[in-house]
Amino acid sequence: MKILILGGYGVFGGRLAELLSDLADIELFICGRDLPRATAFCAAYYGQPLVHPVALDRRAIAEGLDRFHPDLVVDASGPFQDYGDDRYQVIEACIAAGVDYLDFADAADFVFGVDRFDAAAKAAGVFVLSGVSSFPALTAAVLRDMAKTMDIRTVEGGIAPSPFAGIGLNVMRAVVGYAGAPVKLRRGGKDGFGIGLAESLRFTVAVPGRLPLRNIHFSLVDVPDLQVLPPAYPGMTDIWMGAGPVPEILHRILNLLAKARAALRLPSLEPFSRLFYWVLNRMKFGEHRGGMFLRVRGVAGDKDVERSWHLLAEGNDGPYIPSMAIEAIVRKWLAGTRPETGARSSIEALDLVDFGAVFRGRSIHTGFRDAEPDAPLYRRILGQAFYALPPRVRELHARADDRRWSGHAEVRRGRGVLARIAAAIIGFPKAAAAVPVTVEFTQEKGGERWTRNFGGRRFSSLQSAGTGRNDYLVVERFGAAAFAMAIVVEGDRLTLVPRRWSLLGIPMPGWLMPTGPSFETDVDGKFQFNVEIAMPLIGLIVAYKGVLEPI
Image (cartoon, rainbow, N blue to C red; front, side, top):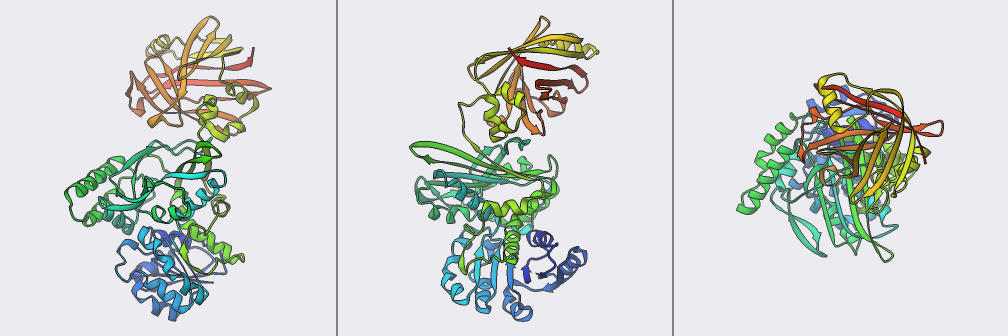
């Protein structure tokens, strides 16, 4: 199979070529306007396909088709928002030459208009699929799965790339270009407009049982989903899609500029795209993780329901996700399943199982969550991952009523003056090789109080479900101090990972946050706890481990 990739050495085209590197029965033509860059890419390429560097501008596509006779053209060049009056010339050339076509288009108007070529594509016996990327191919696959159990009414979604992923200049040109400009969408049951990058929401991407992303600021972006998904779901009244680039300070500067452009009717901000591109690709700090989400509200039977889908990508795997939809189509085609002829958006091109196949073997994790406001605390936070817990751990957290567990523990204490003062303020137990322990769980408004009794030394904390920036975290309060913790399922352990903390409601610096390995597990049919609390500049404050059984 011969595949001609326009923009083949760019961000998306280059990653697609890498994803196909294990396929010996394909041949790749890496095309672009800069032959030295195409040549350098091919020289560094490591894989089984034959690769050819080609100097080819999309405006000369007909010449390229006549010269190379590809089986498939992939347009990864962009920005599709700037293709001008003759924006479909690559599609038209492919139909005329009888060549199949896929693209990475992120421009809503471009993708929405592709179906005008449906009859011509069918007559030529070719397929033309547009927007074959995270938006809308992956998001549409998720919605189709959700629609099996609910009638969809409102959809909110977003993508949060890792700060280390890098962003292409063409993508930045597109985003900055529509900042402050009207964006077509569905709102209040009617076709309407939002303002690009001037509308925002916060969301926490939290795959059940995994370490969540930090709470992220998302702003409205002009993606194909806004126009191509509502016609597929007649009951849909609202749709909103955002992006959450970091660092947040740069994102908020874009928000302010977008609002200023809209309010003052200023010209396009696209001339500043190179500046933002330069800054964003140099401000790389924080966690090397990215994610996506969809939050959907609808009706199941006679009940209002809310369901969300989360995707978490660790390290360098996340930046490849936008290219994986086309990878999946190519692999299915080679396996004997070719897309049907005709021209259309990609919203029915792939199912979740197809994405699962290309995600396999990578640090990409997905999961669904159902809103369960009345469920016990840990089940509410963990979702379906709750049922993967060891039996005794699951038993301890499975109920939302008053109960008591008892056992014994070993306690270690820090020896420094500050450590002793901190332990005394909370009421932590004194050091002991073995001490009887009782833990009482009592329900209070908004949470569950844990009262621990170590041989007559009592101290308590209040655990509750986090909200706002602490969403999908357990917040534990010891007096004036509150600690927001992720609860993560790791094999046979439930691990508690501190993420944020505050004193008297005032957020405190992360580098001062108390830390230490803390987990729960099963040992010989008993619940085992292991808690260690230490602070920078202070060291160990207290550590205690032991076992409990229900009374």
